Length: 494
Image (cartoon, rainbow, N blue to C red; front, side, top):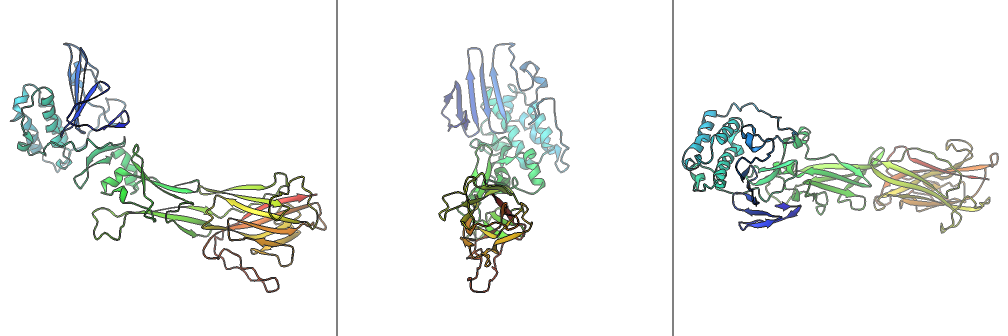
């Protein structure tokens, strides 16, 4: 039980919290409060609340819908309804024998209940019993609840001489099976098929999931991570224990939110939890699965679970953004689904890449320039970035002419002996260098463009197969997406 959001253990011994006396036995929880003019006792068994109040003559008390002087109008409000005037009715179940139900409900007028009839009128209980049990099957255990409600009302009114009436009524013995269950707003405590108590889904909450035959919410891809939330009550109804579920890596289990009773499974690029990485035509997919199958089990008594979910990094879209070197580097923010990463292109004038070619840096003709292409936000253990090609133009448009190639198919252009490529396809960044030049007929500007692709790292298939300078060039046999690659550009001007 929770009191002011703190878990408390109750027993037969009366404990007092904030002036309220609480105790628990095999039938339920009793709370009592008294002042000089009023005493109230409330009994709760997870199905009904019995309220017994002693107050001065002609004194009334406000209830859920009416005050105590108008008890003939009293009725409980429906769940989620702001008004007690809203009532719902269901059509009777044609398979139920209402005459048999009426006979059983009328037990409240017979022994051992007759000793209480003079103190507590059984008529409202009998009418409620017939009204309900003629519409709902006995498998729901509702009949027992009406008998227990009347027995508890008798006890609260000082008549506790009913003995073990449940034996004669062929009911289960007293057992407060839901007292230790704390359910969320979208749940109620009830029986599972196995006969054990559990927090089950209310129909309004479960409707959309059952319509789509799912156990929870859609996959959420965010900040280089994927997560999936399942409703614990939906799993309870199918006899599935969320603690038995895991991702591809059995060490990755779901986390239960105690307030919402939703179970979250997630993985990210740093902790993949067994996620498989595959490449499609235009994207790299990260796929994982929630499963319950255990090959060591010979038999199982619940539904098997296999829920596959994924997120992706799409190949960057074709783009050309030219600029004059004034911010030291150009940063392109790329979003794939919800998995984000950045691509940076930075020029340097030293091999250690410590001196940035800034706006006031004088880069002379034939001076060596180093260029770093770096990504941030990708899983460096599983993804590599391949600089497919780099070239220069005299205009901002990467497709314009004249054009001078620096990198072709991931390798240095053999026609330009000043070009050197380093670390290409091995990391999430790469470097290359070349000697500065200008276009003879368009000497004012040099625009540098580079085209990149993402590649799944397996062995060395991402590393370009570049020829020895004196031998014939060979193309690389890499495998990665064939969508439009990223093009990133920068410019120098005199």
